[in-house]
Length: 90
Image (cartoon, rainbow, N blue to C red; front, side):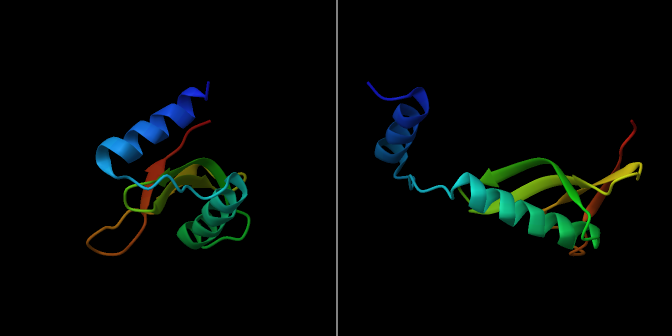
């Protein structure tokens, strides 16, 4: 008997023809760290939350710079091409 995640992936693949390939956790983490550096313009960026969007094969993340009160959402395709900033309170 497989895991629930494995069974769900198998169902999605059979029912909707979705690929079962998702990058490894290490690959996803590295991609999100790079996206965070790009989104914030700061090499110290920390990943607060991150998602791999399977259908579009893109990443979406919430990033912050240590000791700053603002977080940045990266990975959104916006009309201006700029990243979206959101207020973040401790």
